[in-house]
Image (cartoon, rainbow, N blue to C red; front, side, top):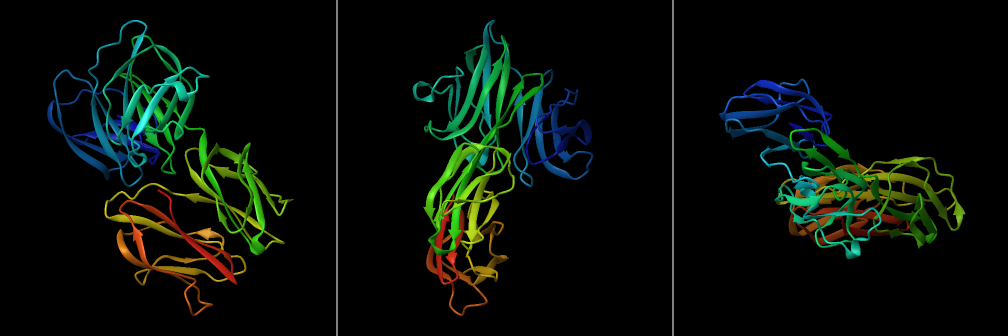
Length: 392
C-alpha cells in the first residue's frame, strides 16, 4: 500500500484480517506481501488500530503484483487497486501514469517541460484527468523535468509547480496528484512501479486580504514579494493569489501607516484570508484558515459566517430558514463551515443581540449543491455591509 492521504499521519493495510503493511506515513510505500488469490477483503486502519477506516472487497489474480492507493481526506478515505503490470519502458524512455486523487479539485492538466519553459507554448503531457480517475500511460524521454499541474484547459490556473522531477531510463511510474488543505492547490507523489514514492509537496499557498477598518480606511498588504491589496478602501474583499508558503510577517499598512505584525504561518497547499479590521487608530491583523474543499455529499452546500464589524462587541448569529448554524461568531473570526441543504429561495439572516432588526437578511438566497459560501459582515457598527460570496 501507498499512503496518498495527507489527512492521516500513518495507516495500516490488512488483507483478510492479516496486517500486511504497518505505520505508513504520507508518501510511504509498504513492502509487497504474498496473499491468497481470489476474493479477499482489504481493510485500512489508522496505525496500530483495529477500527476500519475503509474496507473493500477485491479479486486478486495469481502471480500478479498490486498496489493499494489509500487517498482522500480524514473521514473520507478511499482506496484504489492498481495492477503493477506495465512492462519497462525502452532505454532512454519512461512510462508515466497519472492518478488524480484530488477529487475536489476538478479535472487537471499535467505539464512536463524544461525548467525555464513558459506554459504559453507548452502542450500538456496528460490532459483533463478527472478527480478519482487514472489516465492511460504516456511515454516520455527520460530526464529531469519541471512539473506543473493546472486546471484543465487553463494554463493560468496553476495548482502545483515542482522545479525538478526526475524520470529514469526504463522507469514505470505513477504520478499521484493529492489534494491540498485549501481545496484548490495540490501536491504530488511519484510512485515507481514496484518501488518507493518521491514526495513533491507544493511550496505555494493561496491568500487574499479582507479589509474592514472603520472610517473607510485604506489598506495595503503583501505576503513576501506578492502584493495582495494596494490602497483598498474598507470594506473590501480581495481575490486569492498564490504566495510562498511558510512563516513570515506580512507587510500591512492602514492609511499609509505601517503596522507591526508578528510572523504568521501559512501552510503549503492552504487557502487563507488576511483580515485587517477594527478601529483606524488600533487596527488588528488576523490570519484565518479557509477550508474551501467541496462538500463530500451532493445535495449539500458549505456555509459560514465571517464577522469583521469594527466597533461591534457582541457575537453575531447566522440563521438559514430560521435555524441557527455555526454558533455565535465574535468579531474578528470566521465560523467553521456548516453543511446545509442546497436549495433556492432560502432565507438568510444575521442578527445581533444589540439590535432588533437583522444586520443582514436575504429571502431568496440560492445555495448550489456542493458549493462553498461565505457570508461576510463587514464595515462598522453604524454602517454594516454584507456580501454572500461563492468561494467555489
